[in-house]
Length: 287
Image (cartoon, rainbow, N blue to C red; front, side, top):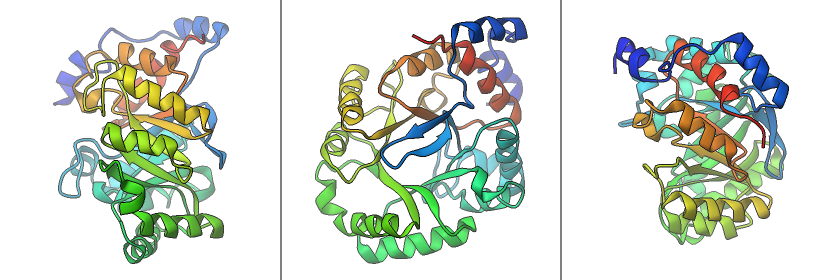
């Protein structure tokens, strides 16, 4: 979608949000994109909004990496940090590790939380991934590592080797916490019952687009996760762009959920990210 079309029909639709309007919401209590929340039992402190880098990923590239390149995406991540965000959402499959590494040349490592994802299954694969990921990112440790895009309900058996390596890495401080990104309701239900999962990345929006099941079913599982003390990160809030003409409705929905701690959205330029920073508090009247 071209920028002109986006401004007409996307996140900017509905006009500008006035300072007076934001003040009125603030008086009643709001949730902001820049709020620092504590995620999961390992108490990772990160912004409510993560800066996603994986929109429409394919072949190790995404909208962000294809359109912006290393320098442009690094600039966008730096802009987010300058405006109060500290949560970078990347993955091996996105091909965006070098872009995060470039951003970290401008932003101190200790100011940001990095989440990445792996498709590793065995111990050897996971050990190699951790070494490679840290080299590609230019870091000594990674805050959150997730098993990526799991669909198998029996994934704890299928990926036991990778899980064991991540557990050891957590004990050594190489990884601060670990968990899973699920792409089926069976895998999600297993995650809710698996103690190893400290953090879950779950697809959620009111239309059920690109989700593991209908919203009511998914919310039930996410509430089970929260009751078990796990951290929950939402994704596909705008249905990978299919719901971008209804941003206020989608944001209001996810901000109202008692089972989602924070969420990731992949802005593709500064205007989109700035718009999200305004729209999130405007749609988050505290219950």
